[in-house]
Length: 73
Image 1 (cartoon, one colour):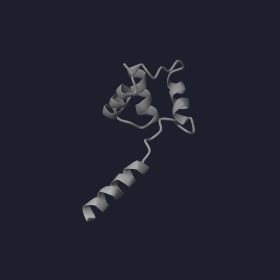
Image 2: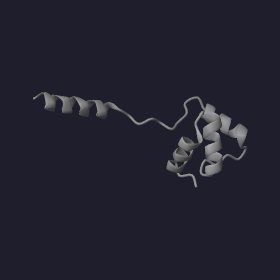
Image 3: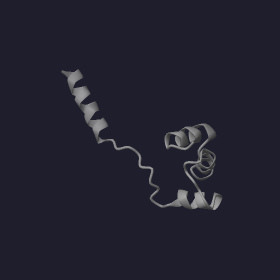
Image 4: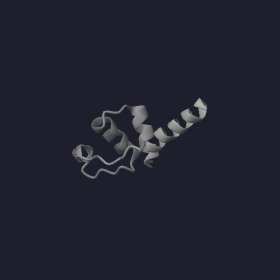
């Protein structure tokens, strides 16, 4: 019975989670990107990684992965 209760509680907790939004509420990342590149193209992997590192305080590995998942080539 405890196992079933634990599964139900875990399922409820997971159902309440929402994925992180890519929208920057304040627009600070977009502003930072525009300062680095006047014609910023998030689909350009080199630009995407540079903006991620500079504006989102990322590192090369995670930024490269994130940009690839966002469709940058």
